[in-house]
Length: 263
Image 1 (tube, rainbow, N blue to C red):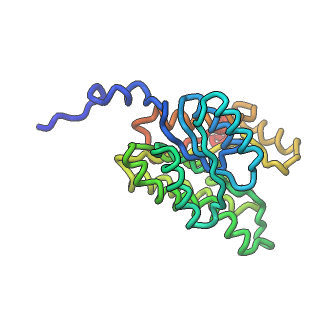
Image 2 (image 1 turned 90 degrees about the horizontal axis):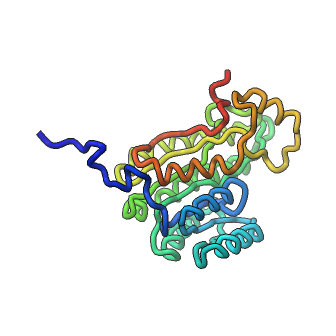
Image 3 (image 1 turned 135 degrees about the horizontal axis):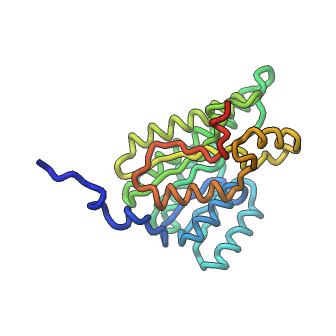
């Protein structure tokens, strides 16, 4: 009878947490907000970063200066529009070429805008679906050969609204529900070499144009922990999934203060 691969037979790095030093992560939308927090967290663990951005050039340059001030030549910036499939594929190739390898893909970039049924148009559909669902698929497709070589991982940033729809945001919710399904499908298709997981943030960062403090307070009051989270909460979960979760794949982890257990 063949010997089973028991926990004590697993490599020491898998039992104690993989070392992230000098490994390379590509973070889409990585210059600010959740992406910026994730970049800082992974950089602090010793990773080298390829930070993608579209319009936030000043924030991207400032973040690169900040992180390279701590460790020289550890961050590369790449600008691009994720709605263009050819550029998406080139983004991955350039990322791997710039730093010599690819160990992690963080699909963080996202489009969030109201799309009431009575007024949403095809342009709304294309913006949200292309950014939130099509781009992660083609980024994962392009990254897969590199990640298989390094036994790397993909982390998708989903949303609790994938399961708890937000009124007048049907396209956004549908795109994130699709991303959740994509996470599980890719975990099947890319295993055993590549792990694929998703994080579903709750009340972490409000949209930049959302100034309704009363609505924020009502939402937080319905959360078991009675508080909003921070971008760092998501960043630490990304770190966990990359470094400490060698036996976790195909999972969607809510970081929401318990919001999803409330009826």
